[in-house]
Length: 210
Image (cartoon, rainbow, N blue to C red):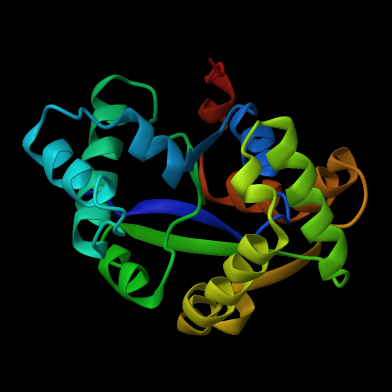
């Protein structure tokens, strides 16, 4: 991959609403939302890379960072080849990657992080309840276990939160994730729209979301 993609990172603890807000942004011309989970789901399980990834997941092991980054890069290349993502017009909105400092270092040659939207909520219990309700709604009863949820918070604090320290402090913007999804989106747009306008031509408005 020769292009260093202009990117916005959606960042925050589990249950803070990154996926929801990323989908909202991805529906707006000039933004392309890419969640790490979507990359895994789109992987060709019969390919060499796919077989390697499946070999870890079937053993219940985490996919190594090197494979995750390789998979991500191949997925982005595929999006560009199909014209679904145009780096000259679209601001890449990343959700769920980089997940740790190692991934952040590996992505440095591939992405130019223009801004990090750090979604935060002071009421952790509210986020726990949100995750419980989401798990029940999506029929993922194991994820509704509060012990599982609290473990995810612990992993976030130990492995993911340190990523913020890798970037200049002025790159990170704290956004209140409390309130309705529409209100949170409004706060995020106040941050990212000026960045999108400053970095791309007016031609980006011609992109029609799928």
